Image 1 (tube, rainbow over the protein chains, first blue to last red):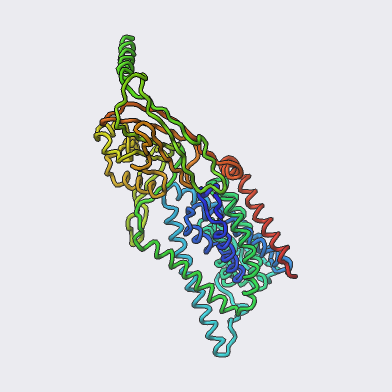
Image 2 (cartoon, rainbow over the protein chains, first blue to last red):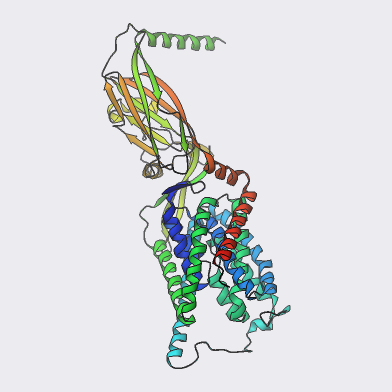
Amino acid sequence: MQIYLPIADLPVNVFLVLGMGLAVGYISGMFGIGGGFLMTPLLIFVGISPAVAVATVSSHIAASSFTGALSYWRKRAVDVALALMLLSSGILGTATGVWLFTELRALDQLDLMIGISYVTLLTIVGAMMIYESVRAISRTRHGMPATLRRPGSHTWLHGLPFKLRFKRSKIYVSAIPVWAIGFVIGFVGAIMGIGGGFLLVPMLIYFLRVPTATVIGTSMVLTLVTMASATVMHAATNHLVDAVLALILMVGGVIGAQFGARTGQKMRGERLRLLLGLLVFAVGCRFAYELVVKPDDLYSLRYVRSG
Amino acid sequence: MRWIVITLAFIALLCGAGSAMAERLVVSLSNHRVAVTSSFVGEELVLFGTIEPDPVTSPLRPPYDLVVTVTGPRQTLRTRRKERVLGIWVNVDSREFVRVPSYLAVLSNRPVNTIANPDTLRRLQIGLDNFLLPQRIGADFADTVRDDPFRRSFLRLQTQQGLYRESSTAVTFLTPTVFRAAIPMPAAVPTGSYGIEVELFTGGNLVARTNSALDVIKTGFEQYVADAARDYGLLYGAVTALMALLIGWFANVIFARD
């Protein structure tokens, strides 16, 4: 069944898009991430322009992270104070990202920027995740605990001023790295059409030593707010959010996520991280291939204005 | 004042000369309104027409050739070219095509370059190669030579999308004076007002022309969404974000297991 997308201006098969929503939703539920880094490339692959894909996916991630955030909220696994601190700079990062997005689009370099951001971020983060999880797996093989807990270990980050105490996460850290992380996630999310969950969770664990009990719930609240505001900002400035496409993706996404979460709970943590690392790395390589290999067509068209 | 009189006299003379022995085109379009709905996958419009002697006593001069040029609403597009920079492919050069048709179909009963000589075709802008496609060059607007790489690529990309086409079989003569032209409207057809120019040739000369028009409109929900996104961006974004929250909440309620 074909349906015409009013903003993307092209007809797509409803079941194809719904299937994509389900598949990405399944993966996002399994790993506890938004799945934007998979959804945006998939949409580009079916012919939707990168700009519309990035803008639309933000609303899809808002939906799936809200579902997740509600569950974590009930389990009291959200650190509201930490989420608010991250958000105060996250919104600023999102606004900067949307602004840069608009500027780059005018310079015909948006697609390139999206491509390069994907390659750099995904290959590095993917490789790090693979390395970390393989080491964890080999440690369990040798009868050692999978994760090395180093309670009380301090890095230079803990020496920074403006210290704040976050009660629910039981951490006492400077506001500077918290703000920096929030800004980076907001910025990267708006440019790349990703929620940044796969980046935020490791950052919170490694830099701020947020305990696993609150890390995913808090990350989901941040993702929810940055992506909801990215939707509004992209719609207001670039008019590129396709509500029809978003609706189909959301419905598929939230259903898929429920089944994914069940599978995820049955798997071991380090194995799950290895799988996610491989997935992230593979998507990064796919983008690298596209940038390096000579395109079929060196020429492309961009709509400037009517009249 | 005098040159106006002369011009008017000249025009009168031309018209008079034309009507001494000429043809008149009578055309009718199957549908003047193409509605783009959620299930729109493209459509084919049919233009019927006859060639009438004008005045009725004058003889007809077959064989005739017919060219139908359909132009969509004007828009400005940029053609970009990628080049390898530091090992990756980057858009380095671009040309802006100013106020060019978003849709352009040149339909004829045989290849246009066999219908009239190149000068005539160029003057009348018949065929994709002869259609005026102004590019912004500095502060000026000008069309380039027809084998300019940007112009060629622009035509190729638009043709690939089905928005530009040149067909030498789309016009068929049912009798020597009755014809039918099939106008294809692809799924991605731009909305707006379209002009249809019908030109009749015999022996390589233009002998009659007429025009018609049609509208492509988005209807119902699609139009509503597109209008809202363009005119009320902020509100539209807020509603979309709210929809996301509502669906997220619904899913949580429905699938809640605790």
